[in-house]
Length: 313
Image 1 (cartoon, helix red, strand yellow):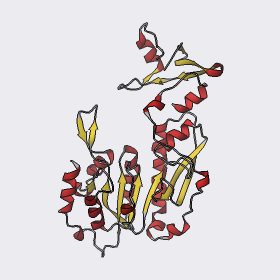
Image 2 (image 1 turned 180 degrees about the horizontal axis):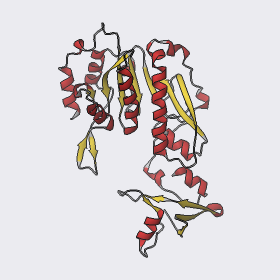
Image 3 (image 1 turned 30 degrees about the horizontal axis):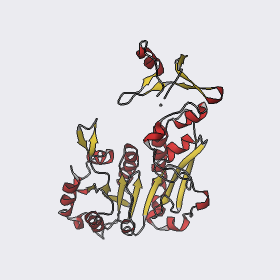
Image 4 (image 1 turned 30 degrees about the vertical axis):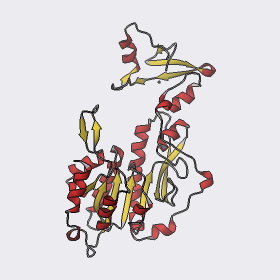
């Protein structure tokens, strides 16, 4: 299932029989890659099969197959695998290395998509791509734009200890996450929620928001009602770097709690690992995940030390 094979097979596919101008349903292209994107794709699949549906999924664009399971197997992205499991034609799953590749753009134009939808696709969309669908490209972004523009909005929001976040539906422009906002939904943040759970929840909410707003997007009225973002209020959410994954206990416990691994003088109290932090505060850790291992309880980790000491690096 490599990229070049998919593209060659698509070039031989006769699009005119499936997506011609006489069809009442407008062709839509979905772009997404990780597991959270499958929630949006599932909603689109289900909505497209409704008797009164205004659109059909003409193609899916996702990241190329990659090595998973500790590098042993080359596997399709979660979105590609999900689409195949739903019976979607492999000829209509594109996996370009970059969204600006000439062959890919040529194949996309051949489908004459009215609209493109992105949800955690993971590639920058060039102007040549954005000029193809006449109704534009709409993105589901897990933040209340213009807050947290960038690759890690959920992680950065939790790191900052925000009490409210949300999901936005916005038109895509060349500037990162800066397009007019069609709609958004707010959400209070639970102190105990983890980034993967919040991300999944926001994309679930985003898929509902998308289906609700699709009629206005498809009839063009969404472009009229969409509100420009206030760039003066924009904040950045760049990708998390490996260096940022370390916790330094010279900071207060709340800062480390929001950020989230280095330890010293750790004790075990009431099913939690207790780390002394700055300002006479203590961070209690309930679960631990060692590199390449599964998540285990703090108690199981403590028992597994068997007399060994946790050492500061």
